[in-house]
Length: 157
Image (cartoon, rainbow, N blue to C red; front, side):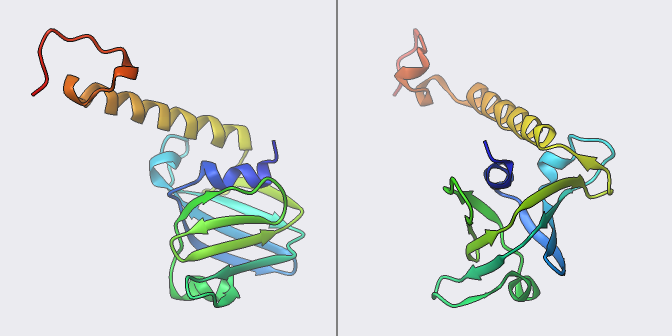
């Protein structure tokens, strides 16, 4: 496990809403209120501080490459997924493909309180597990697959 890479899949559906650069340190806010509000104190974002940054660029859908900072000025990309296993990490976003190459990462809440990767991971996993369970309970017997081992006396029309 490499938390520098794994965090991007945990925060899928999050929006990179703000960022600052100072030397080789990149600080970004990832707004993901449906996950963040499960932690105290209340907030709506996680703060990721990347250190030893060698690359932070976005390739838009036309193939044009610009810095992440330039793109944040025109829009805020939502994180979709990453299939990366090593650096550089390539993240699919709603604005194109984000490439990040960096040495270290720290995590904090938007209130400034440091947090651990494991806390974010646990909170995300709990959210998605609960969402799936709620979704399953709301499905009618006819919508359930045979893999659900659903037994019903009523025929589906």
